[in-house]
Image (cartoon, rainbow, N blue to C red; front, side, top):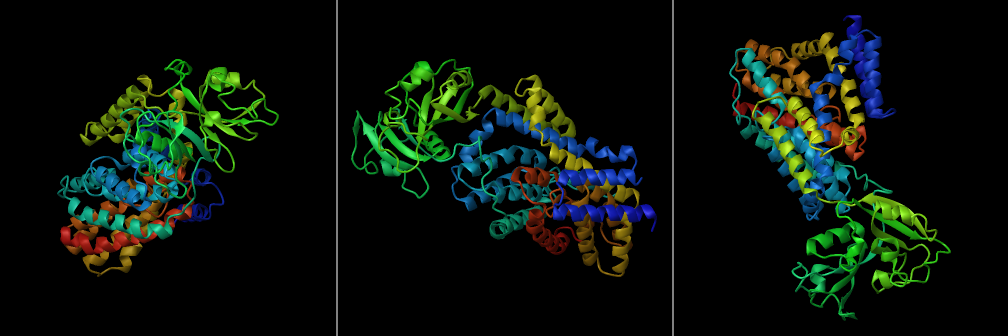
Length: 587
């Protein structure tokens, strides 16, 4: 072999070792691969930088921005709260995978991943479930749902185009569906069963200022017409370990006996204690409200409001006094929604509890009110975060833009890269996102990872490495039947897809598949289907497919997590392809 071919294979081997061992960050490895190819003269400067101009790279970046538009409007959080009502992890995983697999049959799976990634994170965190148990299944489901139709993935369209250019008949829109549904069913079943043992549990993200930790004491008002009205306390707040505790029901300044058996009426006040996320979810589900008194504390409704955690400091003038005693709300222009105290919860409303050193108040306030509060030495500002709020205008525009991006792509008016870039511009022009927010929404590590790895596929193609592997693989199988060669083509495509883009793998293998069919004197369509399915279902590495790269970053996975879950699934799909493709696409 030529020296450049040996050098290309050496760079490939080194990249695989570094990716698997994770001695360096994956984006650093990608840049090292790019630099090595350029310094060794294996690729030209233009080819080395082609990954940054790749449609796949730009599309992923644009999808991050489009997703940010939906998230900033509050729509994603709202959808996440609806999904969070599915409290059983196995049922949530099943519904999630079936939903995204169905949508991926007609919508580009990268767009589906961009929309559902923050939804799944929001929903799982709300139920105290580790997102790492669900983001790999989310990515995989978008892939094996996409193989069901001609427009489900760009690879299917590419294989169809290459077949027509070779004078072969193409594929109809739903011709892949009967075969693809078997892959969807098998993939979902595999992840439901094997995922319990193979998917990593990396815990809950966002420790620190982005979450309110601990159990808060809160008093919620029951408005007329609320879902809690007319139901017993134990029905609306069931006693569950680690759940929300119903401490008391107060009616007309009197505490009712046996709160779990008492019937809730309009005007009652429920004294609750629980994790803040759980309290918020219960409040919205039952239509409860915080203290409606002191409406003058609301301020300008256009002002953005924050949740802040305030700790009572040592030697504070508030120690021993209740919030009501010092008229805390009117003094500081804030509302206190919850009180956190170590040990047993006081059986009285938060505003009547004498404060102690170390108590934490969860306050609802404007930025201006918090700035004024910083001057008080009796309170320490621990953290603050913007409150989630649905902006109907931004939500409507963001959904309209996303639907326009998807619609233009499905209708064939423009490629996904063009429509997604146009959508990003629309979000900024229509003031759904500020330019700085759009840039900040992009995970640049993923972009560098994709851009750095793609030139490796160019080098493999330029130096004939892929052709060299293909020729020797098929040379060893000379004289074998079409089923054996079908399995070989599927396996070869699957392996190439893990180290280069799925479209590049398809471009390399489709000519080999067609020539193999010609030499055997059989129909080439089964081999083309094998290429399309293998190139569109890449599970073993986070760099093999765009959706994997997005899940890899958001889930804080290790490189080997994908291999542990994905390799058995790749082998399962390989076996199914050998068995089922000839049944639906005879030789």
